[in-house]
Length: 326
Image 1 (cartoon, helix red, strand yellow):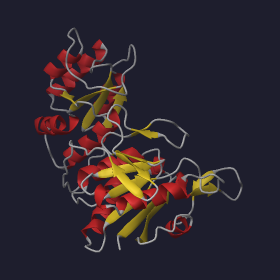
Image 2: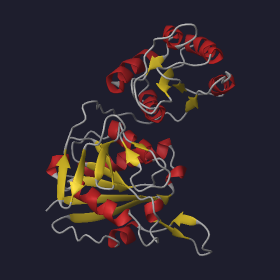
Image 3: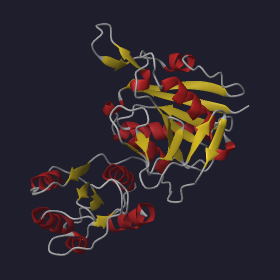
Image 4: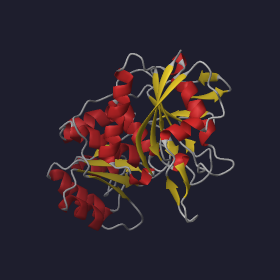
C-alpha cells in the first residue's frame, strides 16, 4: 500500500470567510482538508503534516527553504512513497521550484491548491488534492522532480507558471507543455524533464531583487537595489534580453564590482540571447551579466538565492544558469 505524506501550508484551498463574512482567510486545518476528499483513494495510506496555515503571499524565501527541507525529511523515511503539498497559488511556482532544486529524492513530490476557497460550493480543492495523491502514489511519477497539478494536468516546477488570477486551470507551461495528466485513477506521463539539478545549501540568500524593464525605465531601481545591499539582481528585460541605455550603463558599473546581474525576458516564451549592440544585450554580456536561457525572472531569482546560499561567485553562478537555463 503506497504511503503518502500530505503537507499543508494554507492558501485558498484552506481558506474560508471569517466570522464577519468579509475576508477570506486561511483557517482550515490539514486534518479537515483530508476529510473534504470525495475520492476514497482506496489502497493509499495518507498522513497529514500541518506545516503552516497562511496565504502564500506571506511565504518568504526562508520559509520556502524550510518547506523543502520538510519535504526531504518525509522522503528520507523508507515508509514514505511520496509527498503532496497543498499551497496557495500566488507563490506556489516559487516554492515548487525551490523544492525541485533542493530535494534529491526521486520519489514523487506534488504541489496543488485551489482557486476557489473551501467554503465555495464548487471548490476545486478536494479534487486537486485527490489527483495529487494519485500522482504521488504512482510509480510513473518517480524521477519527474517536483510537479504542480491542477485540473487533471501536471507540470514541471521549472516550466510552470500561474497564468490567470482566478480560473481553475491557471497553471500552464507555455511552449514546453505539461508533463502529463490524471484520467480517473490513471496517471499518464507524456514527457520527462531533462533540465534538472539539485543542490544542498545550508541556507538561501534573501537579498535577490527582481526588476522589470519598461519603456524609458531609469537606473534608479537597479542602483538603489545595489546600494541597499542586494546580493544579486535579476533584470527582466525586453525581448532577447535588452534594457534601456541608462540601465545598461548601471549594469556595466555594478557588474564591475562583481555583483551578479542575471538577465531574463519579460516575454512569456523564448530564450534570452545577447544579440543587439548600442546598449542592448551584447553590452550587457560584455559587462558580465548572466543570461538565464528561458528561465523566467521569478524562477531565476529562486535559482540565484540557492546558488548564493552555496557561496558561489558570479562565474560559478553563470555555469549553473547555463545548465538549467537551457
